[in-house]
Image (cartoon, rainbow over all chains, first blue to last red; front, top):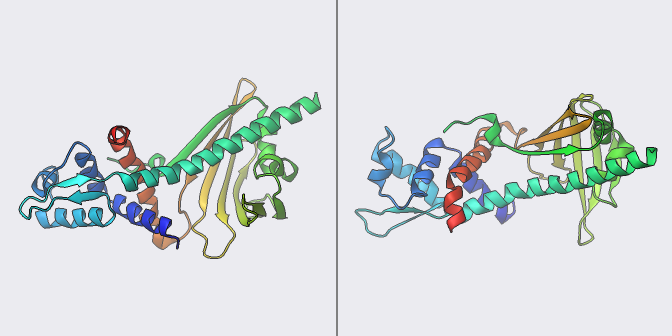
Length: 112
Length: 150
């Protein structure tokens, strides 16, 4: 598997969980500690830490060095890769639609 | 956050200035499809536009390489709906992309709405990949502001 799709798989897997997506949405507002991230959920702190590890491995967040706090902050680059990947499909279809549009005009003109 | 089908798909839509019968024919009749669906220089190896039938073709890339593709027709409901799977015909290809196309009449013109749903085949990957694409889009939506700023 090419490196690019490997990284994408990691990002996709990390984003597949609604709790992790909610955590990312929270982090888009600014850095937060594990405790702050746990607040909206009924999950234990260890469970939240586990989710954070998945996000960290996917390169979606970065964590501070202070052992006590370790605030997490969003790292958006992998999301941009996902966005680019999805956009490529869309762009291909926009181009195909351009060709279809041109082709339909041509054959209708020929028919008179 | 909810995981609706719509969140798992890419949707592309456009209005075409042509009658619906003709627009539909452009997708399911070989002499039409070869003129616009694929790039110039593409060779068709097999064409069978029936449910379960395939269209196999090779498309030249920019650097002289040739890329084989396969389209498997799933549903052909003339003139309103077409469903097919698109995939690379090479070894170790990723899962096919399920594509649904609807054709609506609008005052003599035709609106095409195309939906791409990722990873429909491999069952073991399905949960992860399906949810993931949706998740990616959801996340992208909620992070749009952030990305715009950074």
